[in-house]
Structures are given as structure tokens and as C-alpha cells.
Length: 296
Image (cartoon, rainbow, N blue to C red; front, side):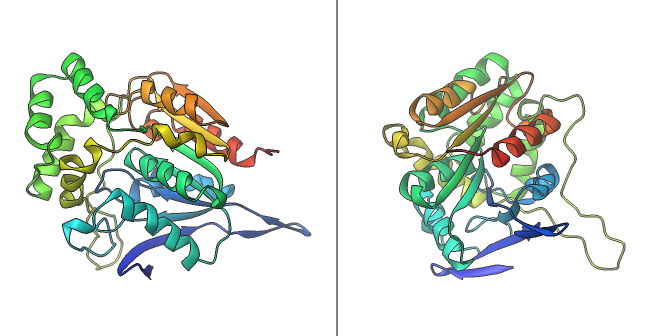
């Protein structure tokens, strides 16, 4: 499905019921917006890692502008500001009052910006493996020099830090080289480049927008800073961090937990950037319990 909002088309999908029958009773579940990372990623990993959350909340999967199955536009449109405003526009488009938000990595940066600006619309906030300011980049560079091999250090210098990817092929190669740092589990991440199908229909290709990633890493990710405004976030907030996360270290999560008034920090041992794959059961349990928790 696509919402025509703010001069573009934003792809979204929904899983789970909002009003759910339970015997002779009706249960109203919260609505949870899931905001992917990148910049330039898409919503598919949430459908693999977080789909069970539909038992607790109605899930709204979103592809940010220019990402996934949302409309491609000009590079000047790919901004943190637009990503924040698109969330608000989609909330209104769907006729929702308060929403819960789960933001992973760059999606967590978008989620912070939204909660700061539109706090009255946020019921609960979940920030997973993310950071509150541009300082995460220098910390990630230092961490990579300590734990990365020569190939990993070189590929980040060549492509990532300055946003210099030129094709999807280079993005694919980057993640192949960096995979072991994003995910510390014994089993490697399952490839999602193709979807299985039993019909003659062509399988969909997993889309990663290198153009959107380039805009972020060559521009606004080097100067955004939410730290002075984090105190404006009043909604209950759950912060999840991987103890071995190389790109958004637990130090960044500790900063958020310090400045957000009603925050709970959970640091996962033996986990890197993709907590939902390193510790899937605990990831789901922490979020489920948080969403079910009755807050005053």
C-alpha cells in the first residue's frame, strides 16, 4: 500500500488487528510504527525479526521516502527532517491518535526527532541500536580500527564514512565484508535478495537505496544533535543496545538513557548492531513486556 503524502508516495504495510476479539471481550491493541535503518534500508527485516509483535500490537511497516518500495525522488528530499515529517503525515493519513514507535539504527534517530517534535502523539517509544547525535560516527571509526580487519577498515574508508557508494552491487559487497561486525551470532544472516515463490511470478528483489545512504553519510549524519532536546521526550521509552555494537555503541544508548526522563536501558550481552538476530527471544520479550506494561 502507498500513502500519497507530502508530495510523494510512502509505502506501508500492516500486520495484526487493532481491535481484537478475545472470547466475549474486545481488546484494543496499540499501533506500533516500525522505522527501519540505513539510511536507505527498508522494512523487510522487521517482517522477519519482529512479526511476532503483532500478537501485542498492530504493526505498521514503513519504507522511508526514496527507500524500499516508496517513491524515488530527488536527492535533496532525502533528509532527516522529511523522514520525521513523513511519520506525522502517515499518522494523520491513517487517522490515528497516539502511536508507539520502534526505531532501529537510523530509524531510531528518526524516532527521537519525532518524539521530540510530536511528543503528544507518542504513547511509547522504543529505540534499538541507535544514537542521539553525530558523535556516533567518530566513536564507530575508533571502534572499527580496534576490532575490524584490514578489508573492513578499507571498505568503510572508501564507501561508508563519506557516502560514496555508486551502485547496489557496491552496497551488497559492503555488507558481505562487514556482516560479521553487524551480527555476532554463529549463524550468518539469511540472505533476503530473493523471495521464495511457488508461482511463476518473478520474486521481488530486496531494495537498498545507496543514494539515500550517501546523502546521510555525506551530509546530515555528520551534524545532527538531539542530545540537548532529549529531555522533551516524556513518553515511556525503552532503549535497547548491543554490548558489542560497533557502529552505535552502548555508550550512545547510555547518553539517551541519561537525558530521556522516563527511559529504561537494556544492554544485551554478546550482541552487536542487529539485536533482533543475536538475541531474538529476549528482543521480542523485552519489547512485548514494555508494550504491555501499564504506565501511570
